[in-house]
Each structure stands twice: as structure tokens, then as C-alpha cells.
Amino acid sequence: MSSSQEEKAAFADWINSKLADDEDCKPYLDIDGKTDEMFTKMQDCILLCKMINLSRPDTIDERTINKTNLTGDKITENLVLALNSAAAIGCNVVNIRSVDLQEGKPHLVLGLLWQIIRIGLFAQIDLQHNPGLVQLLQEGEVLEDLLKLSPEEILLRWVNYHLEKAGSPRRIQNLGTDIKDSEAYMCLLNQIASPDRGVDLGPLNEKDPERRAELMLQNADKLACRVFVTPQVVVDGNSRLNTAFVANLFNTWPALDVPEEAAEILDTLGEFEETREEKTFRNWMNSLGVDPYVNHLFSDLSDGLVLFNMYDAVKPGVVDWDCVHEPPFKQMGGRYQKIENCNYAVELGQTMKFSLVGIGGQDISNGNKTLTLALVWQLMRAYTLALLQKLKHSEAPIEDKEIVDWVNATLQTAGKKTSLSSFKDPEISTSHVVLDLIDAIKPGSINYTNVQGGSNADERLSNAKYAISMARKIGARVYAFPEDLVEVKPKMVLTVFACLMATGLKNKV
Image 1 (cartoon, rainbow, N blue to C red):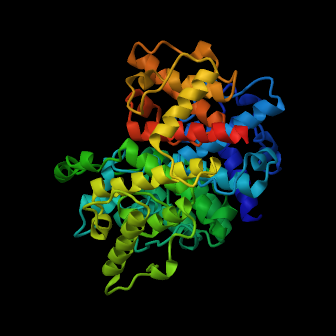
Image 2: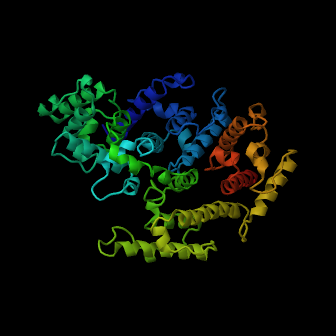
Image 3: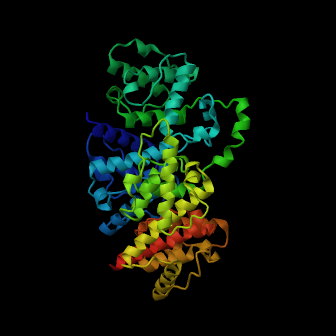
């Protein structure tokens, strides 16, 4: 069986089990993973929307999913909603079009599904959800070192930690070839399982690799964790599916106690927790396919490479790659190469008229939060406004006032009573002006029975959730969170209106 066939079967089983109790999904289940019916059942994107919400709850407001009388236009709306929502949670959607999902192109559907599933599986592999991860700190490390690790690196440490606890001399460096003989898995399962589960090391006596893998998975079944992998997948060393298997094991049976002496370390955890703004920037970067993938905003920008990716996205060709130090960085002098990269990144920002007074490459390389966020915000703003500039066929940069004027003109033409004074307008907190603008761009799209007065916090949040999902549904690639509207965060508010303006201009082309 090819890796794509293995993944198709594994993802079908995961969807069947996780969405089994969802009334909207029952007509689509059970998906037969041995056939291609998963691709046809994904074509109206209801399942895909549900999977996005499974991985990142409340990303899509259920009120915005078309579930009945699915005409061609309604299916297209679902496809656009799903694709823009996938981007908003950090999926790389470059070169994926809504028509590709509608046609059920296997490699694109599987690739997107894996990203969505991966995001959900990795959501709790952090210190906020599992403070026991402090056990994985190695000699000489501090908490910040652990926070810089990718989820895959944490999983490797977790497996090796339990192998050591089990007294096994075995250590793994990857979740592919190193686990093909099932030995590490058996030691791991035996170590994390509670005694009443009946997990044992008997399978290690089996000589045939595939038979041993089957016996190992029977033990995993005793922990209700026989998912994603078959004996053949284990023996083949499919790293994607084995990573999913281990991540699910971690989420279900972490077996990491918090030592008393770690209490003082964990007291500082709050200062490292990812903010909503940081998450927005990270999701935006990852949706554009940056390499390397951004897990931790500040440490992952420290060599400048992701920033160069973003500059190229804003203004293709602006980066002179001959001036860039690329990995592997030298053992001696690698630190200076990274700083030189970051110096060049700051220089590029200056040539693009960014306000970078007091910001140097070393600040970015050192992970200075305030200064790094200042640069990244200006990159995101420039990217968003560059799209508008292109759609307007304008030589001059787009100013904030142009967006505000366009919003008001569009609202007035559509006969709406709301208006926008600025991106700090307190009336934004009800989301009424956003919802009216969406309805002005695509008449009849807003179901006003879903819109509440906004007199209290619950009503304002309900409106904001509806507005963000509806914006995505009509084609706006919005990365902001509903809370950004409720709290009237000017930066994110700007991106919402700019993306809606871009959608409105596209519709007129």
C-alpha cells in the first residue's frame, strides 16, 4: 500500500471516530478508507469545516456553514469558507483553490487534511496544557529552551524520556525509521500505561516485524490509542502517520507528573504564553507556506529566513538571496551569520519605508518581543495593503483614509445606516458595521436574524464570530479573531476592513 493510500485510510478512520456524534456529519459517515469516497464526500466541504472546528474549536461559526439545499453556489461558499478558515488557523493553502477541493484532487485534499489534523493533535503539546513537560528539560536548559522546540521535537524528547524511565538503552532520533521494529513503541506503551490496562512486553519476543507491530498495536488498543497506524505503516516507517500516532498517545497518556521543585519554574510560564496577536502573525506566515514552519514566533524568526520569505511575499524579488546566509549555519560564527541576516531584514524594511527606529538585527535575533512584533506587524500591513494597491492598479501606497472612505461609500451606496470613523471607532465592538459591509459587498449574504443588538459582552462576541466567518465565506482572507473586533484592536481591525475592501474590489473586476 502506498503512503497516500495509508494516509487516506488513516484519515478516514479518524474522521469517522471524531465526527460520529455530529448530526450534520452522519449522512457522510462511515467513510470507506479503502476507496476514494472520502474525496467525493469532502466536495461540499461540510466535513472539512467540521474538521477545522475539531482542531481549532469555534474557528467557523456553525451558522455560516451551508448544510441544506446545497446548490452549486452554496457549495462554492462552503469551499471558500473552509479554505479561508484553514488559512486562518495556519494551514499552508498556497496553490490550493476551492475548485481543487470541489474536484476532490487526492494529493491536495490529503495534504490539507493532514495539516488540519496535525494542528489539532499538536494543540495541547505545550506547557500551558501539560506543565509536566518541564520534566523534559535537559541539563543546563531553562524553560525558554523548551518553549523553542517544535511539537515534533517535544514528542521525540517525550518518547526518549519514557524509554530512559523504563530502563531501555534505546533512544530514537525520528518517528520514521527508528520505530520500524516496534521496540521503542512497546517500551513506551508499557511505561505510560496504568497497571490495570494489561500492557506487557511480550511482543518483543516476536521475530517477524509486521507480526510484532500487530501485537504492539493490540497493546495500544488496550489504551484506546490504536489510531493512524497499521502494522504495515509502522514497518514502512511512515513518519507522518507515526507522528500522529505518538501525538495521540501523548494527548491521552502523557504520564508526566509535575515535580515539586518545578513549581518556581512554572510560576514564570505566563510571560511566555502566546498572545492572540502573536498567534495571528504566526498563522498568517504559515498559511503563506514559509519555510521553515513557524512554531514559536520569536525563536523561529531569529535567523531571518522566515522574514525574507515574507518580504518576498509582500514585494516579489525584493530580497537579494546572495546576501542571505542559509543553513546549515557554521558551528563557529553561525550566531553572527544569523545576526547579519536580521540586519539585512531590517535594512529591507527601511527601504520599504517601515518605521524601524531603534530596531537592529540583533534585537530580532535575540527574540526581543516588542521590536520583533513591530517589524512583523508592518510586514503584515504592507502585505495586506499591497494586495489592495494591485487591485486598484495604483502606483501610490494605500492610506488608511482610503479604506475608511471606501467602507463608508460602499455602505452608503447599499443603503446601510452604519458608518466607520476610524479603525478605533468604538462602534466596531458590536460588529454591526462589519456585517453591514459584508452584506453590501454580497447583497443578501447576512442573515440579520443572527445579528444581535450588542448591548452586552455575549451579544458582541456572537456578532463578531458571525462577522469573521461571514467575511471568510464571501472570500476575505481574514486572520483576525472575533475578540479583536469586540475589543476594537486597531491593527487587526484594519486588516479586516482591508481584506473586505479587497474582496469588494475583486467582485467588481
